[in-house]
Length: 467
Image (cartoon, rainbow, N blue to C red; front, side, top):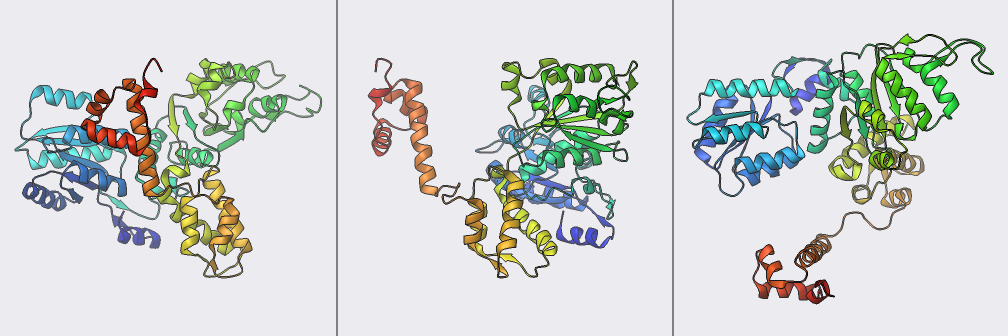
């Protein structure tokens, strides 16, 4: 969204949102002509002169749709599609070609291309396909929005990461359905925030959102909390108690840390999900349920299943759609944005005016490893705000807060050397020390390959099978 559109939303005024089109072609004249046509049709167009340039632009900003030529030198249209699909699986792609054939079109559609048009294409048909793709993908439509925009569901997510934008796009698509969602991600990454966002974007948004941490409550109490109990069911049950399944009726029940749920209770939960009714502890009859289940865990659930600590049948009931929430270290471009966002919030709470982070302090934040993710970043900012005696928060306070002297981001030369060495070792292991074969795989001559081995002090003989 443009700055003017953001300003209009902030003031409550309506604004037209133009879908962003990333247009890719190696022919500059055709690129310019098509850009003019699409802008005239109400699209915001970012032209890219080739596949490599398109990937560079994608790393900076996620468009609503990608339109690419098929035949291009270097990275062609389908290779670009494959690269985009790995990192942006929900981004629709339309392929244009002057050399189209039926087998190529069938292959492209089977691989997930949204549209395939042969040049000379009909401009109205292309515009129509772009509009359909934007609408079906759930991206921002070219309609009038107000302050009650559809983006309110994700207001808690402060991001400019293309990867995170694509992730949230997936969440938005999933929210409109009734399927159970299974969220995996490290502690502190925002799994409950994501569950709440999905609820807000769903048809159940006006009904309750109820969450529980399955690992924080003893097994006997957890059963009562989930399913409820009747008076006299156990010692201390002085009255009937509605469980969370009933409290969330018509809405969403969020089962956090589901991987910590005891096995006996997993059996009972599975029965509730299969029969769509719950029986309170001590009751003789069951009560129908109407909830959407979102569950989450920071544990490796596949390992838990292999070790018999988590039931396969329950896993498949819960994991109809799986979302893997990225760690903060995977989207470092968001760290300055989040840090300043938290700083503004905490400055208001502590009644501190004009607080800023020193440039060196921000560098430390960006390079820190963040095992505790967004929650840890918030705690670090809060600690520095509480301890700072000056308007500019110094790097020393940040360093003490993160307890990290060594940055997580390597220097460029160190990273390149490590990559080269690991790459060479992998080739030598693959070829069992055969330098000629390894050099061919690396597309380097033997002399140059030996020079690389010498630089990293690698001896091919130790990789031979009889060594």
